[in-house]
Image (cartoon, rainbow, N blue to C red):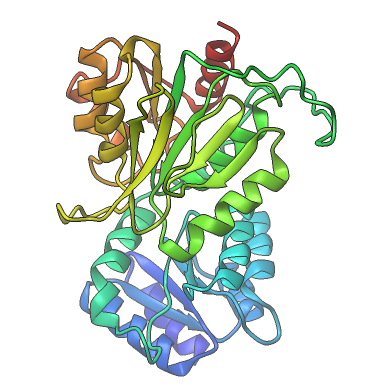
Length: 363
């Protein structure tokens, strides 16, 4: 089966090649049919070991990778493939908290994105095929040398999490806002783990992510960071040395209390935005209630144009606005639109953005 497919792949030199890795014959068939109809040449592997062997014979443009498989699991396969032949990998993950942890580990190892698992009783392929095809289209066109870029962000020396934090400011007069989508989780982690325990300003983050993932994402970041990291909840107060991660399924708005304190408001998706949470929603809400001259707004890698409208409004009102440039962005989509519409004052590679966030905290 594998050898016949290999010969087929070698005959079709012009078609983009996708390897579907899953121990479920049903899911292999469903994804295979979807990609075949979209014009891709498709190979199949029943487990991670078959996938590792197959990629050594064929130059695939993208791999969709299941997590739980016999012989070799998806996490181990990602690690091996990125070691021997770096290839854009999209994790096919159930939307469960347990698989969220493994998915984040896979992203750390080099996978670029994830999609909902198809072929289950509670999820039909038709409901997610547009998302799958859009992410695969990005992956197959991603220059493979982009996967080899090593981020070299400035790292502060770590302090113990139990160190007394008497020098953390009680008040703040500035604010950091960050938006990201595809390729963003690892960058968000690198930013937050680079901040010192007494970073003087709050950080609010919108990362496009499903509802069951954002809580685990915040837990993971809180465990690895010196500052406090939490998933957004209604009424949560913004504080120095605290990062708030937008909750999946809700828009993150900032509101001002009568005392002047800033507070989180979770807003339902009544405007039918494609991404929930939306970067635009966070940026625009901040622009209405805060002195924008004291805001640093950052747009990182991602699909589409979410954040461009809100960042433009922030810049008009005096915010310092930065976007990730095309040299490091896995998907130069969201930052490109922000740059082209005049919303961003500067664009720079990701390591420089980390440096700017640290400098912003130094006054």
